[in-house]
Length: 255
Image (cartoon, rainbow, N blue to C red):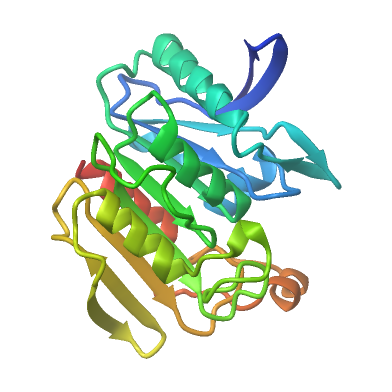
């Protein structure tokens, strides 16, 4: 893991990068949540080890200082992320490999915006506790979506919240992505356990498939990641019925 700095619009922006030892086979951009940092996203997402499987994995930093961390500028940071992808492609030679943008909470909101409005093509969107509607009603290029949300998320409520950031429900956001990819807004429902349901929009092997993993009883958490007792009391339960990192990587590996 190494720090990198790029200049965008006259400002110096930072990101952490984990790179493979050989030729890269994929690129992953992992965005931290609001008030968080790239370092915390490294620990939460467990995505840095994907470099051992051939991925260039980047953890950029948001532009807005917030408490002990940073937040994303939903509009202004699209240009930064495009510049970061350009930098990664040139520096690590990843011009012809599939790419994924993923994020947690506010990072998932930013990832949803970038995947549907950035100039660099995104093959997979991985959204944890923060899938939002795409920026356009119909995408020029399909984006496979893999999303996760807990039904007891108090910060970003599953059914939608009172703030503009989380006004639409998670189901509405997933349906919006399905329609933008040319699929029906009505999903196929598969129950894996009593607390884990998969909602599938379109064939699972379709480049524009949308998959929403609904974690019953889980809070504002990343499925599969261990949290301290204090964080669990604040953020809610973690689902261990599905591993968000593994599912996002599975989608990207098959893209």
